[in-house]
Length: 555
Image 1 (cartoon, rainbow, N blue to C red):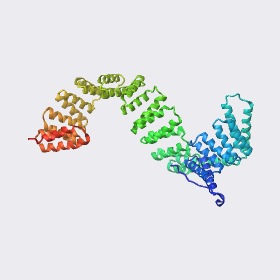
Image 2 (cartoon, helix red, strand yellow):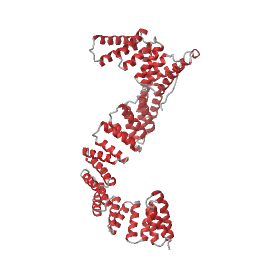
Image 3 (spheres, helix red, strand yellow):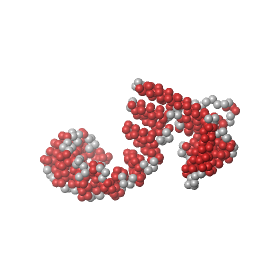
Image 4 (cartoon, rainbow, N blue to C red):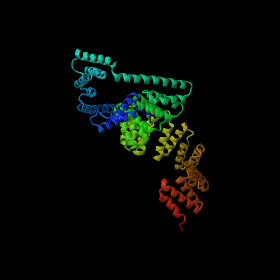
């Protein structure tokens, strides 16, 4: 939250003021503070007080056009609504010069230049000494010249020049302009003082004192943005990232979502607090609203939504990214991945193919090819297409081990064990210390009844990873079902269970070992443990466990 000290100057005798006048004065004070410091608190106070003033006294003219100005600046109403509010003010008091001036201002924003000039001239007639009306009228004349399709005349330029010069001269005698100028000068002096003191403390490595100086200054300066940025820099240096985030967030708020400030906080969060997913989504959304055709925003939003498992939102974001950059292979790949998450595989396949055709980078394209191969094999059941895609992937990358392993897995699944063994060995040539590949190779040899090789490779997997519970269980199966050594098999099953107490299959296999050793009571207990665990893990068919358990005690 922004640190804010709310102070109200002593007003004239409150006893002579109506409730609406008191509320209006509070609104004007908050409005003036907002113009100087641009804090959201002052903005909210001013808006609420103007609304309350109108409720208490619908004839308070100034409340209408001041409220219209704030609501329009804050993006809460459009130009048309602001014009209607100002027209109400003019209708209530046709002699209010400011009401005509604000109506003219909003008419000019709406490109109704002739009507705007009429209102400005009425305002000048009502208050000839007001400099602001003349200056705004001069700008309106110039804007009309700029936007007009008709032939420009000397008179148009003369009017703009006349009102610009007279407005500038009269500003020297305009009390409101002088008052605001003095406030700005005072603010600049205070800012320079605080900045100098803070910089001194920073130079002598007294960051805490510097931070406190800046903190005390933020409520007394309209240049709070610069102060908050300095505070954030100190907080980052001290690894106080939550404080730095709050400071940078205040910078974004005070700058009215200035794109560069939003980019700065995005970079900060991504570097130091990348778990702030919701905040990053908000900041990228701000950028996307300001620059609707900036495709990178939607691309980043898509990945953030994926982190939140909001698949539909991710899909929509990636689609928007492609809308503004339809041939970007990275966007195509990400959208394809989103389709996979939603199980829309045909759409994913088409996009993956487009990304592959673009081939912006061989290594990246190789990864995309592997993703497409997985869909062909696991979803479409087209092992031939999957292997072909992986073979193409091999041509694009220097890191071939993982691809060789993937090809081997496919050959294993379709029971082409010789090719599976060949590719597992190719994978090992580049990754000799990978226990997973040794275990897969052992399984392929086990399926070919090559028991000794299965034992060798399972043992190698365990040697490389002593916590590899699957390898222990599978090696136990080789000794139990391949060599009939129930005692030695039981030791491997027990080790697998020690590593993973909820390993259903290891409990089931240990029970089988005890059953072969004629230890029926112990076997029954293990079968029951396997059955209880399987209700949650669902590794086996419960009927298989129940049948083994019931047969133990059959006559």
